Length: 608
Image (cartoon, one colour):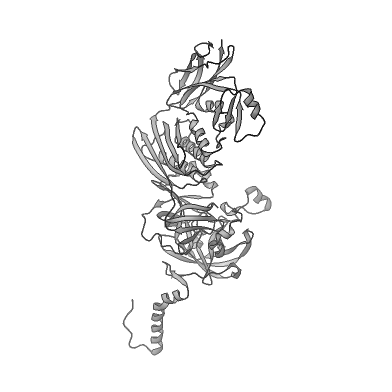
């Protein structure tokens, strides 16, 4: 606070006092005149002037900005150890630095610090992006040169090695004499899970780690009017899931140019050009650890779109965000009903895992869920311009320690994997609705035996088949189904009656066409048809097969194919996928049981 003008100061002291006051008042205007950026919340000026990597020299002193807690951008010092040319790839250099100061020497390089702007000689030189080793005594880090951060598209042809840790495998490291953990690797990008329990993350830990993420629990903060007012050193990231639970990543902002935001200094997943929501991130605190220090982060309000994910930076654009896939999960148990709503990104490499994570967590981490129940899943996936994909199956609890809800999550993940890995077109998912009904107890059935009403039958006759089922820890029961013998079947022919579960009849009637992949279809419509034709696991199926070939052509079944058609396509190139089965499914019946069915019985039927 400015006091009254001293009256007894010597002239030289007065001039010093006056100059200091004028300089203080003139500093902001001078900074603008020199092209220096606005003052950071820490009170340290941030320069927009760039220092090329060609001018970086060993021993140069500098500093960087990051947030350790709250919204306060803090400055820490560093010293250049040297420049490593061609480190990331051809003409892809990095700057090796040592971080200095009480905080960074205590925490080391922190997960979430990637992207922190680095200044040398008062000029912006790059983004903190790499860390050296584990349990190291010095806080040594790698810096991506600023030219590569601000022009990542120019590096688009470089190999995306940064998406995975660049350390050698343990066996190779032992052969070459490198100590474990001595390699430079990308600073971990925290994948912040809000509303997720550690039990959920454990079930998908291998898949999460396979993406190179460090899973961290966090929260959400209410959107603020200033969320989009970013400066270098702030935190922002990509939103993968939002709603009643959220998943987002968090990086430090390297620079802001107009509506363009540069983050991370390394890739998120090397996805290239993308459309992912961008949100403000707010740091609660920084957790120090000798193994892996990390920032504890809350996700804030939406501020724009991540448009690029390249080798040397993640880039975003302030403004409106992209459309997301809404997912509604309805859970019904004897204890009550729970309705949950989520939104997730539409991306072939991310959506299947995100759907599984979100479904499993929403199902199991709420008050009305209980283990030991049979779960019936139903729902649909609505796709733009195509028929919806129908979902229906039942899952009984098992004897292992795996959570009862895990098979549902994996089944939904498999469905989305098949949709998104098709080679025809990228589906646009408009809405996902899932409903889970929970019934107390283990409702499952094993097929013990089956028999025909008669060992012989006439053409056109309806045949009754009785099946002995053994419910889990219950009394055996008999179910009955009827199949009809074709009118045109020849006398003396031997037919096969197959009694089994849905998976068995799928394979018997579709051969190699039934698989866990995208199948033999030639378009997304054909794939959807195949998915909707698959039989359910909570039904007992009886199929009557006749000894005449079936031609499977894409999603079409041509039973009782004449030899002339088979000879025409046999061994010759044909459009689409063609397969010939030695039997044709002539008649089929099913009985819904309310629980998964397992087992198979094959019976012979003679036509007299």
